[in-house]
Image (cartoon, rainbow, N blue to C red; front, top):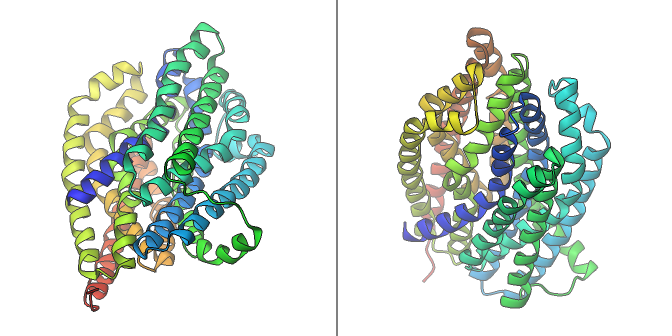
Length: 434
């Protein structure tokens, strides 16, 4: 439990640094008191969520592969994985960013954005998208730092990126009167900060970035994609579900979209430890599985679930008590305020199921069953989302959409957790390392 606590808290603070960038953008932009601006950036966030989720999937493969090699004392192979995963992150995210950049209006219209929100969102993403490969490589190297045990520097990597964004946002948005474009430029600076600090840690401090060899890259691709492929599909499934939700909410007006956009920025910060659990326990799983300490593998699952429940309950109580200040902070009124109050009162506590899903996915990814994580996440983001938000929206409007999403997610999380428990129980029965 202590190992999980240290790895999760440091990872969470680091991960929250990434999401803090979006939260700060939304906070300062809300001061402009325009529902169209918040809606436009909200739609943009749903699209960029695809790109960040791809980066998280690549980071998961980095943590799993490098930690397993560390557990086996194979440092040279660990170095090969570091450089090859970073190069793969560059190739994949550059391609994705280009495809999205060339088709931005199309994606906004699919999500149901009106012309005002579309124009604002497109101007924001045209600045942010080209920096996606920089963020992806920085996140991948941050995952390598966690895998070799330097959780503190991994945390500082993204936390300092958030700090840079917090400093630059008011300068670009207000002092230079750049509005949405200013927020985008500040985000780009934050991403470069994350990249350079992670690069320093991997190269100068730990000397884990070896020379790139094309032959080694080709040889390692299969091992990388065995984890990265399902992990990327698993993580991309989440923004698919998010896109379904925001498209459903968009039918009820810009005010609801603005509120949902703000809620989407609060969630990663409030539940940062829940989001970071899957990445934080990956090295613990990987090193113990690689060293054949199978009894500890099962204990990781148990302790992670206990950690998840305690944390979600505490945060949900805080959100319930702070709902009025949050409404005032973001200047929400009418329908937007009602949606925020629903989230803080009833929806937040259901994140205990999201945490269970993240833990189950990490269990599958790091114990040789990554396809399981893919199927459960894809199922949750499609069958566990679409019919539930349609029915919820029909019965209770925008509020029903959020409730439907929570109910569908809970069902898939319970099933995934049952399968993960059976997997760890089976592994724990194997002979342990002497």
